Image (cartoon, rainbow, N blue to C red):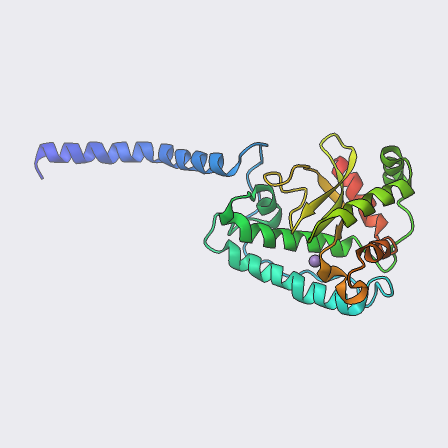
Length: 255
Ligand code: MN
């Protein structure tokens, strides 16, 4: 090698080594800028190392009888929810979401067509996991403690809350969910979302909040028992709401 070539090569190697961290930093910065449109979302903390799995119901499929029937629960959990989980695992393959935890996907998912499969199935998995724990064989009755005070303060009374929540659930056109949430101002609000969207999808929904109660009003949630009578199903739900879980979610959401 001539001296001049050697010097040139040596110089280039030195420059490459010196700027490599800079390029890495740029790549990270570019990626972050693309994936974290306002509001600001912290970077994902946990890298997932295994596929998403169907969580257990936490009670027997017949345990919510007579309010919600066994066959509906079996199919809803064992078929519908299971399908969201497997389609989510399929959907995230080879995407930037592949190693993200579910909450990290939910917070980042956008309305872009390319995100649609992941949005529907990540939402489906999150919403149903949340829904099973929103109900209990020992459920029903009234909210207690701080949550009861907040419900009375926000809506006037438990009955007024019930009416507003039921109206939100009845008004969903087609498939979707009704939610009771805690907003950024720490106040309760009721909202609804279409399909499998939820109030944690900050890039998707208009009313952003932390859900503490959710009601699935897709026909698959009630058609076998209630057929077209969605209001009848909504009324049944109040008999199984797990208010102690919802109360804990409320206190956690207040931070
Ligand atoms: Mn469902």
